[in-house]
Image (tube, rainbow, N blue to C red; front, side):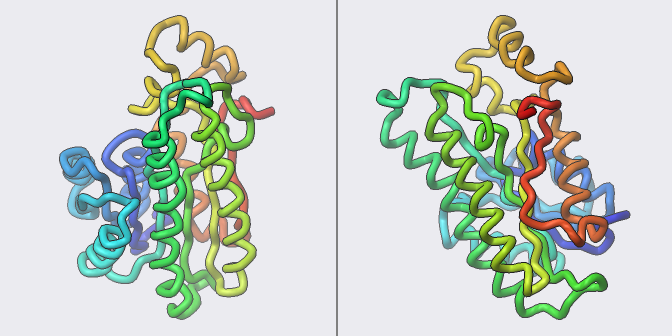
Length: 254
């Protein structure tokens, strides 16, 4: 029960890594608003974990939707303790000069702007709260990627967006540490999520073998792997940890 009585928002919580984080958070005692643009997916995850979770549909790149999701979490569960900016998109492997402007704008909106919008809303709330037992006022967890550390070819703008997430995490950690607010990130390697097919271009045995050959542990990351790492970083056990971008990658970035 490392997250007992904590209130969390998990964006992109209706599938993939977000689903793994929601399940682990609820198992550890948190109350979670499962946010996804696919309401059916969010509702499926919320039903699976029980009354400690609730589904909410939002476009995380919309300022109005962002304000609404935070208001919904507060109305249902109380003051927010943890924000997980997990929602993300990519483009299929494409030569840089052929990536459309629409694809580029979508990556910027979901992978970058959404974090700005949510952070802008929660930081004043966290600052206004009394310090917690160990001096903490709140935690922001951003989903980055090994792509921001060791980029793959033909995914340039996705890689760049995740590098931005890592830098934003570190910058926010330094700025917000005096207020007892921690900001951390996770760098997963390619995982068994709906985005895997996008990263590979096509889900074929040959493409899977190529990806797996770059992961020393020899398997893709699983939603449970990210749930476990997120739980630790967002718990009081990690009260001295901020600004890190923890690699959950089976050794890929070594």
